[in-house]
Structure formats: C-alpha cells, structure tokens
Image (cartoon, rainbow, N blue to C red):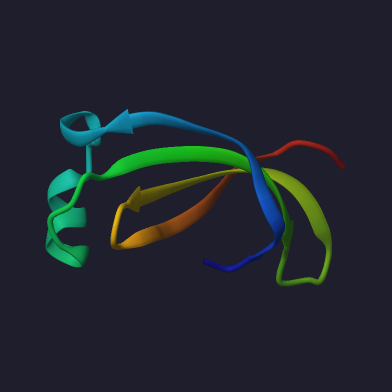
Length: 78
C-alpha cells in the first residue's frame, strides 16, 4: 500500500464473498481460512507526494483477521 487512508471509509459495500472471490485460495494461503469478503468504499487518501485525494478503495476483509490489501481503484475528484 503506497498511500495512507486519512479519516474514515464511507459508503462501504460488499460486492463479492466466499467462492465468488477470484483470489480466495491465495487469501487462504496468505492469511488463513475465514469468511472472506471483497469490499469497497470511499475515503480520503494521502499519496506519497503529500497530496490528499478522494478515492474509491477496494480491500479484502474477514472477521478475526481484519482488512487486508487496500488498493485505490479510481480517484473521485481533482
């Protein structure tokens, strides 16, 4: 993750869970068996150059393990 989430993530949605996650086997190998969900939300992020932008963020999440592998999918404003 080459950015830092500033504040809270809003508009959180689950759009894949269980077997519908393409990378489920890799997640299980890396972090363990759990009820994995792929989620998305909107947050302000601080980029390596110091600028702060609003972005749509995707990540994997499981109870007892937490949020893993955050990634920026798109920027929402300039």
